[in-house]
Figure 1 (cartoon, helix red, strand yellow):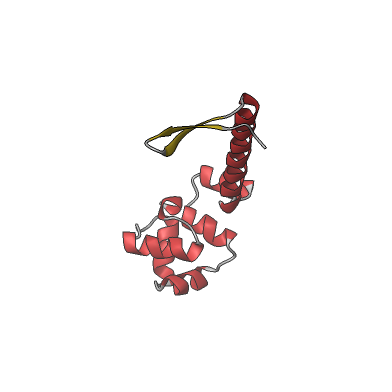
Figure 2 (cartoon, rainbow, N blue to C red):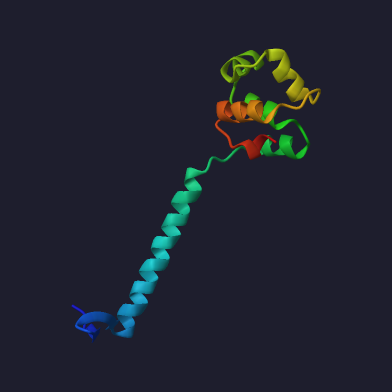
Length: 118
């Protein structure tokens, strides 16, 4: 057990004094816990293959890229988003801009954030 000393104020413990070795061990444990938490957070984020990133960098429409990556046909995705296939096609080809409401629906169908597709 450690040799912790307490400093009290008005009958309540306010400070703890402990050997430097224990203090440094606590800091190491906190650093390790923070590192593990960061890894868990990173693992929770979805990653995509380089081919998806390459297509996006090349300027392809993000809705089309992610739709194809998710294995959805144009009709299937349009149906899930409750829009016409023609409207979705126009969005993907750049003939029309989708409304914010439509783009939110498309992002939800793709399991993405709105920012990922606009």
